[in-house]
Image 1 (cartoon, rainbow, N blue to C red):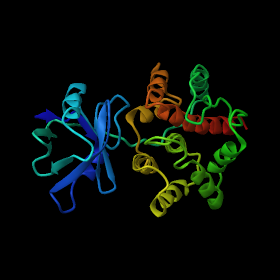
Image 2 (image 1 turned 180 degrees about the vertical axis):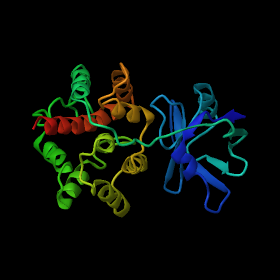
Image 3 (image 1 turned 45 degrees about the vertical axis):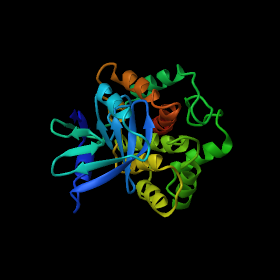
Image 4 (image 1 turned 30 degrees about the vertical axis):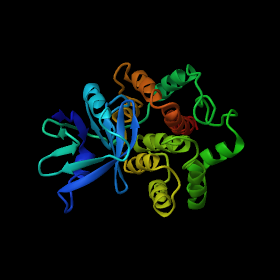
Length: 289
């Protein structure tokens, strides 16, 4: 028996079946620290909390994660029994009995702190690695490091014109390589700042969902992150970082969260932070007007 350590409150609600007490999940992709399962269009990550506690994850110890990884292959099927509160595959049983529940919702924050903005930019300036756009993290909103079409689309994300918003979103959705292309990670980062400190048009989230519903624009994994972000749901590391930008920070946590976010994937964390920084720089520009 393997005991699931924790899961998000939102995922727990989502996994309550409408009718079927038994559901099947197929192994979609496998990593060093866990694996993705798919059921219809729903994605579920099972593994460690190395990249923070995710809104669509069941988190295990590193040891238990390794045990399962040795036994599974892409295409294998997990069975979830809602009444027995277990998931099974081969001879393995994952129990929900002692599962801690955390919250993935990023609540509206109080006023953003100019001092915390400056602290974030100081941390960003130290980072020499390039994001998925082959650039360093932005330190100014009107940066000359990025090309004209990129910056035009960034500006467009802050528009209140629906046509401009759609064009700018379409520039970023699916742009890049991997399971979560760089453009999608950037949008998730920007949305997280907006969740805490509203700066985007109120139609932004409904437009992005509409685009995802009508066209196949990106990977199922990236689409999952975007759908959750549109509902203000993020990893607990992102929730903590955005909370630390307000006027009541708790010590050194901002720097800790900043570094943790950057460790996600090859460039995924850097791409997410790129989106966050454009949101933060937009707020700084507004404050200084």
